[in-house]
Length: 209
Image 1: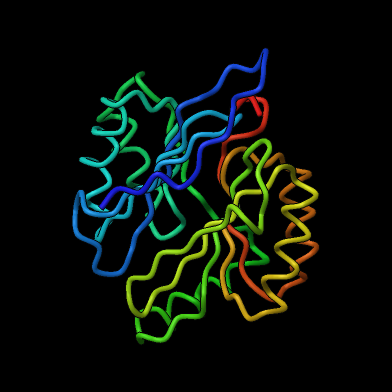
Image 2 (image 1 turned 90 degrees about the horizontal axis):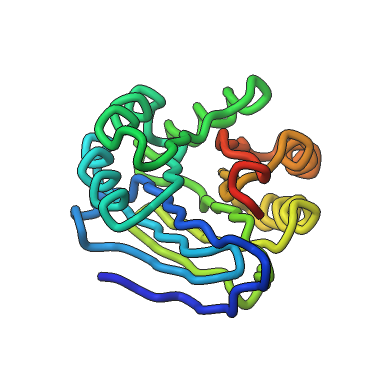
């Protein structure tokens, strides 16, 4: 299942980048769930996999399709980041989402609830030029897992949205698309210990936002 979520005109004088997110969806079947977005930031492809071992094949396919930056979700161990990087070589840069010390206990609690079959909702906040976090958000469910993808135009909006998410009961937040260290810090401060916040290793400078 491939969905083209939205198309936005590219801004002048900005080089769009072909980016991708690979995330683990409970019971997701290989090559079945994919979202594609076009925006001022470039092309973004989001692929769901059912097991971290499937990240290799998914990343190779994405690199074959021209992906320049590939981000692995926090459920995929950084061990797979090394394997993916080796598999695709210099064709794309690879990042994996990790959690700071302040999020470790919360992330462990989320993982436990996930394996017990009753995880709270999770959200991926994605930097995307010109996006609207209300109109452009979309969802994917792999029962009992429920993921909301929320494009935001800048880091300040990302922090605002993160605060709203934890107020409404979201139990996990991951940041994609090039949050800077200061931008990620603002999100962590806004969440204020109410949910774990995972951060990728790509920055705005690398992703050309």
